[in-house]
Length: 298
Ligand code: HMG
Ligand code: MG
Image (cartoon, rainbow, N blue to C red; front, side):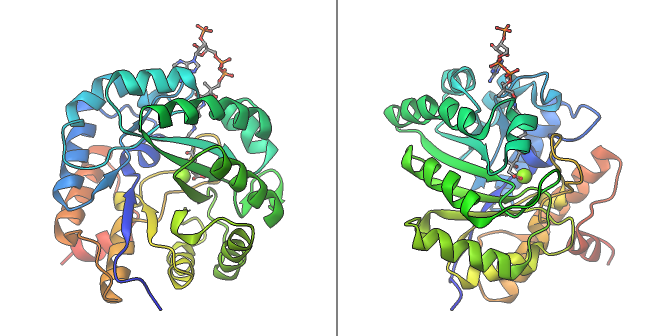
């Protein structure tokens, strides 16, 4: 059985833009987020409060957040440590996300920490966020494969997932950072997480589309009962600290499939596509989304 409704966690403004070489003006980012909200997306990841040298594209978080903070949508922001939390709280952020890794290689590359050192860095962040009644998402990267370590054993993913849930994360987003997952692997990981006490209701899926498997993987997750799916408008994106990671599953491709299945999203596909076409013009590059191309070349 498929769920009647899916909540799309839109990551275009964060995961989508973080890898862009040319600096996108803050006002263009704000307009992008406003248009996404106008297209019916209700959870729009806005930016990251990370070290500006690590992700220069998002160094304008302090300028951007106040421009969109009043929109009637959830605006989660990435926060790696207490310094990041302080910055987010100072601007009134109500939703944050910490981001762990299932592999040592990526923990080092992305956070300059071991897996367990990174978890230790997040613990006080989550604790303080909860004190402020701030919603916390726990991302877990490299849940299926890692560019340095190859296939990632499920037990390794389960261990870090449980650590994130145990420290108080409200939801868990399973990241296929480099897009190598296939549907059977997705089902196996979800089943194992359930057996180890992580309920499907707390789980979201975050697929990158490197091998063109993101929609198939999403369908496998929906069949398992998952109702939160991450996607990036126009299929923008990639991770600066994971070689061979391409864009996320395109939100338009996701919406096309979900609406075709009779699953509600609240998203107006026409408005969303127009937004991605508009953004592609700013980035001077066509959207990689098949659905955006199909709908904009009529
Ligand atoms: P570090 O170099 O170990 O930092 O980096 P540190 O803790 O040693 O601090 C060094 C200096 O940085 C200090 O300044 C801190 O104050 C400052 P100093 O005292 O030397 O003047 N600093 C900060 N400044 C501003 N904001 C902060 C902050 N923290 C420290 N928050 C650190 C460690 C975690 C900071 C760094 O590794 C970092 O910022 N990493 C972020 C990487 C990132 O954003 N990656 C992309 C997001 S993850 C992703 O895309 C995957 C995902 O999409 C899911 C999937 O697809 O798998 C989520
Ligand atoms: Mg990602």
